[in-house]
Length: 505
Image 1 (cartoon, rainbow, N blue to C red):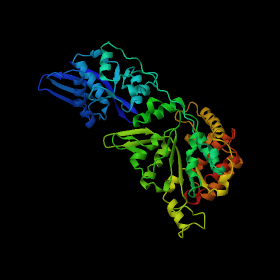
Image 2: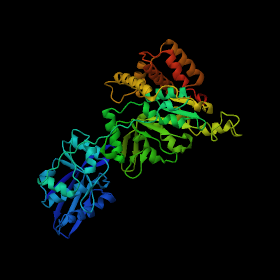
Image 3: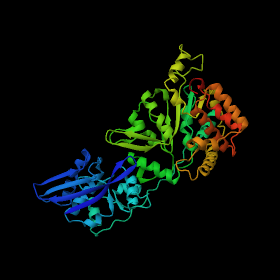
Image 4: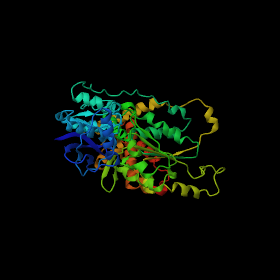
């Protein structure tokens, strides 16, 4: 008799349905798992055998074959243990075959029959809801999967609990979504002494999701400023929270099954590899740019990153997604992030201070910043020089606005953009606008056009640079509460574009 249990195989964020088909046939006793399983899936037969033995269930002296269909789809991960075990139990007549017809299951089995948490419960719940099925997952994953309200989620703690549910002895209650208490950030922009222009750049970047690079001597506060950027961003919307949490679910980063409304802030070290930043490795897992989706990616000491890593960022910045290509598959992840980078002006860091600069100035600065290619530098909407802070200013009381006050203006500007792009899929902020739409919403007045034309000719702005100035000017106008882009908005946008403009446009 053929018994089937549904499960999923992950292809990026997509959880594709897989059927675990089990059949018992005459022949020499054996247990085979087929259907392109990886090592972890092939070893499932030993975990299933031991888990059944712990429940005093003996396998018959027959040939057991489990086929994971479709057979040409690679199967990776230990979450196939539970569906394999359930299909085998159905084939043995221990649980009803028809009880598995409307369920999707995943989970790893320990040798004593306990269910171990696995990655990807949230995407699996999305697929189960789309198929009008019930999801069966380990108890530790239940709170995470239950966030998909359209799916009924059952979370047994062991294989024995699952058997008791399917046989009707002890039905499982539906799992409840995990609860995460929002954590207020203790990092406030009021802690930063001076640097008012840098604070303004952070406000503009947060309002329109504009990429920002800060260049300044060591100790000028670049990292301190970047760390306070998440406090200016509005909370994730329901859809954004679900998108971000699905990626984090695949990476195993969801704490206690909770979905956070806080935007992610990722800050990888400059020794990170291409696979760590972009994605890849075993199973083509999401990289830092995808883990920063709908949040902030902070690259400190940008010129110290390997050239190959930096150049891989160019396409994802433009498209908002990355395709991890492998010989047998192409995995796609979203990666719409706000890129913030920091760099010293040269290797010694004191190019602008004649008394402390090395004897190679100014060539050391050209060589060091030159590690950032022109095409990558051209993708930064805001370019900011961060001057050092005088030691005498450090004893002064906090000045300027708090992060909460700036965040209120950012939220108001974001609300304007949300209304502007309503009904346009894929467009959420000004940084997403392009082509005819950008020209429509960001057309400056006559004086603004003349200013922009003069600067474009004088400094040789590229077409990309020209359009990025328009996007930033539109965001500045939104922060100003102006329906039109005027000359002062264009002038301020240009002022944040002219860092090393003579080299990159």
